[in-house]
Length: 131
Image: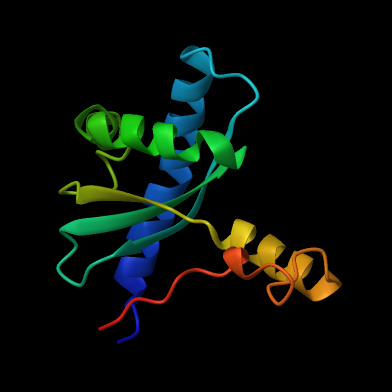
């Protein structure tokens, strides 16, 4: 189902303000050299849940940063509510996910160039699960 105009507008507002909140928290927290970008925000039809996809560079810090962000979701939601109080009546519940699409594309490029050949090294492939 395609997103409505209202969902797209709310997602855009949240995305713009979330970038400012997260980058501000990263620089104040002493995490210089870490780039946090909000790659996509999707809002449910009833506008109660916003799924936020974060792209974090460097990738090795992504897992620990996402844990910290998830533990501070209430503080982030409060800061976001203060910034958008004249635009949104209710602040949706925030759910954070890592957007690893850039890493996935980089892995595909390496495979196509022959750097990581799964035929020569079968350990590069994920193990298949039996269903």
